[in-house]
Length: 111
Image (cartoon, rainbow, N blue to C red; front, side):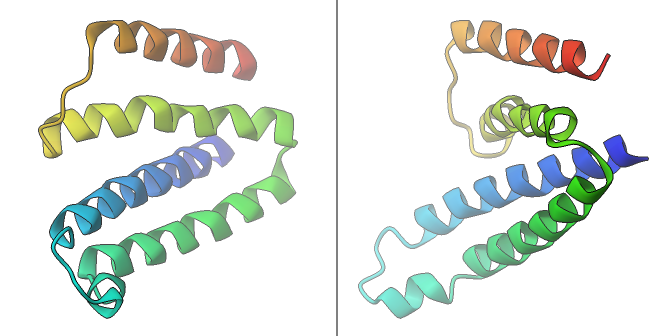
């Protein structure tokens, strides 16, 4: 069950990153800092980040950091994948080789 919650934390952090990017895109023309602060995407990102952080701290009470922390590297796979699909950003093919290495490394750490 702990690994499910850790994965949910990673999804929350990854979602927050995507929302930060959406907030940055939508407010690229904003002249007032208040417009950026009140961006729905930014507010949602902060809320999701906050919840994911609280869940992360709770999981650190359950697991050693050396077991939990490698899961955070999954965000290096999730964010680029989601950004290519949802934000239509491009990622070079060799980047995916690195992602495969990261995921393989995570599998070694939890085994």
